[in-house]
Image 1 (cartoon, rainbow, N blue to C red):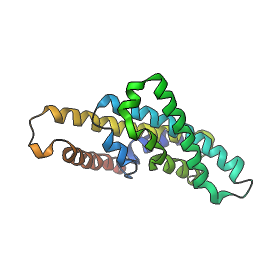
Image 2: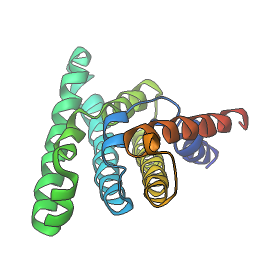
Image 3: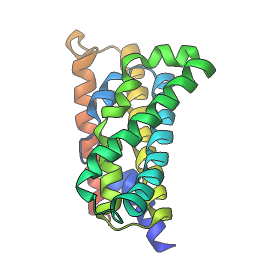
Image 4: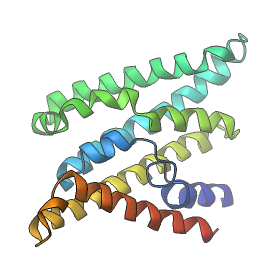
Length: 191
């Protein structure tokens, strides 16, 4: 139980992949203009990372290790992630076409989102079992979603506020991202 609490707090706050390790910055900045779109992307990434953590653990320990093919880990994990992203993309196209269009190019880019691969590889490196690996993947994705939705909310508020013209759009998003990162890094001092 203590391990799961450590994973939960660690992956969402202390070691947040976006805010503390700076993985996944492209979709973080690209899809954070509206809260609705950020939530949709967060859910898609959560699904992909959680399932990828589960499947890549199985691939590692039931395929790569027994056949002494550990050197193919990165390629195998990328293939798993690519298949999962295709499943999400096709599901969104059929179930929520407006969200599919809003996510645009960022949806297929989940395949190359380094957060997904980093979580899968770190789960193996950290020696997690199947349940811990899957839980870690889910918590990491929730941390990504939290950061994404927080920035989207801030950006929506910034658009409505009276600020200098130069802070509107991307410059303001970069400044807010930096301030959020400093805030998240403060959690590292708590544990």
